[in-house]
Length: 408
Ligand SMILES: Nc1ncnc2c1ncn2[C@@H]1O[C@H](COP(=O)(O)OP(=O)(O)OP(=O)(O)O)[C@@H](O)[C@H]1O
Ligand SMILES: [Mg+2]
Image (cartoon, rainbow, N blue to C red):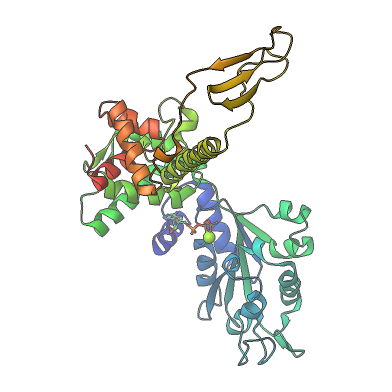
């Protein structure tokens, strides 16, 4: 059985020896020859999409059609028509009669990915076709029959969707006659470095460079990382490092720069790192800075143009003083217990703000970005690490920007 499993993994490009993974593949092989409905569960990026392919290939339907439909990617308005087809003229734009996936997959397997995203009305149709193989095209009253094996997958908690009223309970029990759960990468510690090496070799080929390797401290970091995006995230990170790093031997410090959640456990080390999968984060931070800056400028401008009637000089006075512009200058009158003379106090040298000379500051994003980067570099005498921390972007991003803008 073990050898059989290995050959299946090889055939489907599945890397790993974890017992949870092996159990999932073994389960897929056992249910494959039956027509049992299978629900595949597991976090995002764990490799759920491999399982229905195995089920189809090891079933009596393997010479029949196989379709994978991402339910989350089809707009609500067209999903019924995509799945069940429609009659000519059934809605605006339905110029011809169209077959849906349930019709074209007759005799084969239909993989409904992200099944938790199906609208409730579609769930009713799906339940019916699962019960007796019957369905209606949109706009038709003619019952059609189909013989399709359904495999579904989700990274959502369907029980939660049921309690939120977004998923039908009867459909849930119909779909998960057998459930195959794929373990998250953090529970497959032994497979992490294996996957890393496989991806490193794939990207070495793709980019025509030697494969990246990890030093022992980097391997330890890699294996203790939580991998919220699982194998997909690991793959993306290996690709990024393969392209970005000159040195093909990657140590722990370098690796950390590519692991966004690392800062959670080592707050002082990577406090300002950028999220890897959120590569626009640095830009976002700059945008926010600029936005705040613009708000400040607007406030200042409006204060200059409409000076406040009352100056908030101190909290000690029961009443705020009143301020008047006179020929002699700005007159401030304090009234209240702290000033018994109630005489005006004249400020002969009021601060002069010359509105006309006010320079409109450039609000171009690029100018702002350059300005902020230059300021941060000046502040830390060109020390990029410190400057990057101050800017809230990764050192790598800073380096890229320095080059891009030709900064010193
Ligand atoms: N065991 C594995 N060995 C090698 N590559 C894998 C393995 N499992 C998954 N992958 C790769 O990881 C990526 C993510 O896998 P997949 O698309 O199946 O995730 P998923 O579980 O469907 O996630 P989601 O719920 O976000 O759709 C794919 O590029 C896939 O080829
Ligand atoms: Mg998927």
